[in-house]
Image (cartoon, one colour):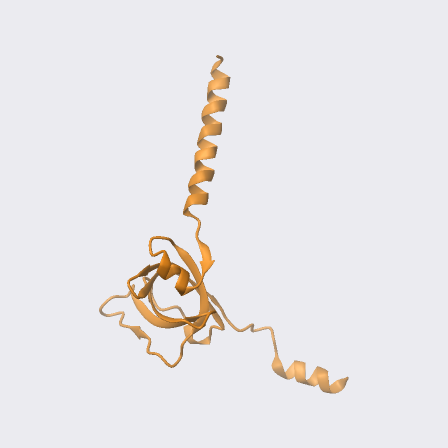
Length: 133
């Protein structure tokens, strides 16, 4: 076999291994119920902040721990332990996606994504345009 053929086979094998590891590590969107059933898997849980429950962030003790309660799209409420600082404008978010795993009855999140209200939507402009018609 030529050296070029051997190099091509090695490159293809490395590419296949990289693709397989990416697919194996990818997480999926789920509810807290699904995450509870499979605590060893990483999930994206979509929900809304439960404003009736407490939020705790004590940067003087641990700047990388923020806890809050999230209600998923099925209505199940769980405490989320975010292993990061409290995000700015957290309370204003319309929707929250936490990425992590269940640990007992708590969801331990390594990442958080927030959908905040659009600053480009002007409710007054919408009302004025409706009344002008």
